[in-house]
Picture: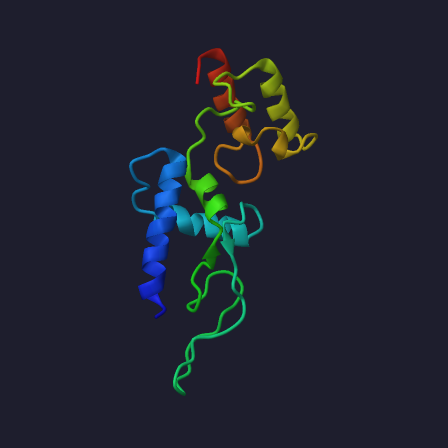
Length: 153
């Protein structure tokens, strides 16, 4: 047993875990999210949501198939998913800028966000600032966090 007979139920289970992590009723159509995530990763600027399989081929019974390579290929597709990273990438941030997950954004958390944006603090200091999961904090994300500081999460 192999191929889609294995991959389809595995992906169903993976997406069930992603939905559970995101506290949603369903992730919906995923191609519009998966391919940009892979592109960001393979261009060097995003979460590593896929393990890139770069070796091997799908030759069978003396029929030449395709060869695996870096990034997307016709043998392994996008690669094998890292379920934890995929869930993080697809689950919405509940409150942009809420570094300690207490449902409030404080001035100190906004300062941490600015420091991350200026590369004077690591993203790990407040991952909730990176609402699009591209590995950096932009002015738009700081503005969203500021809106939460002025209002509420």
